[in-house]
Image (cartoon, rainbow, N blue to C red):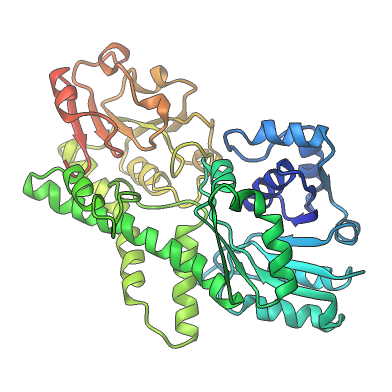
Amino acid sequence: MKLCMIGTGYVGLVSGVCFSDLGNDVICVDKDKNKIDLLKKGKIPIFEPGLSELVIKNFKNKRLKFSSNLKKSINNSDIIFICVGTPTKKGGSSADLSQIYNVAKEISSSINKFKIIITKSTVPVTTGDEIEKIIAKKNSKKKFSIVSNPEFLREGEAIRDFIYPDRIVVGSNDKKSNRILKNLYNPLISKGAQYLNTSRRAAELIKYASNAFLATKITFINEIANLCEKTGISVEDISIGMGLDKRIGSRFLRAGPAYGGSCFPKDTKAIISTADKFKSNLSVIKSVIKSNENRSNILLKRVSEILNNKIKNKKISFLGVTFKANTDDMRDSSSLIMIPSLSKKGALIKYYDPTGFKKEFSKIKNVNYENSIKKTIEDADLVIIHTEWNDFKSINFSKLSKRKKIIIYDLRNIYSVDKMKNQGLKYYSVGR
């Protein structure tokens, strides 16, 4: 099939590349000509394991193309995926849909034959209705079909999630579009993926409801971890005990920092905004947002306790600063709150991340990037394991540190409490 992916961000690029790997002809379009030129050279703007190899392979096989010519790309395609950003509005909580509607206007001027137009971006309920109205101003409804097909890709595991999805959700009451899309996804359905056909509005809400529920699980176990620390219980026992209940499941029941990234923070806010619009109170999700926003303050208070409230001139090292492992995404990472706060209190901070230097910290006083784990921790008073990269799972702290009294604060519970104590290290973790 001939596909056009509008937007080469995380969703558009990963989905487009994977669709081409399934044998489809895919054009990835972006108005950023510099990004398109880099992609043609095999240079990937995001960090995602395995993506670079798939781009090079399918580009060479001519199944994957990159372009900045939107009109031509739409004309040459049968299925159009809208994959542009829907960030939170500045100064608000609702989703900024300006990019979505701008693309819809451009599509409306470029339809030369029947097109299936799909929103793959995460959008609030009724967005598909608005897109339909925009395109119908210049085109007969017989020439297009608007479908919601949300993505469920995890950063760091996106390729696997695309190839082996739990479910494929297609929101459309149009039988022709549903038949074509089921055929498009057939290689994945044949591997066991569930194909769910719903109304368009239901598909839009499934995405938001899913992310809000997962954010709730993370926030819930973080609050339980706070209780565990005060009662001498291991939160890991609680997570296992709960997770064995098939109604609950073990995934997303790992205590740690606040949730972050490109989805949970903005999507929980957006679903609240949508509910307010329809005069419906989502009190549970409101509490989740509030609790998550306070999470970094709780961790900072713990850092202060560990250092006996003496933070000034203390050398604090962060291992990992992205919101999670296997991604370079800094959006809403708790390090963006913790590092500036500690710097303001006079700490001398070093950080190392496998994805390199972060511009977000370039103007913060006494914060420096190091290019190795050794350089980062060798003279540290306190090492904070912030992100669960594999690089950090077997460090010999005693060997790398020049200080005998080095303290470890493991926000991801990577290490065994007993093993660290047996090594004579002062070790703290979350909910244990």
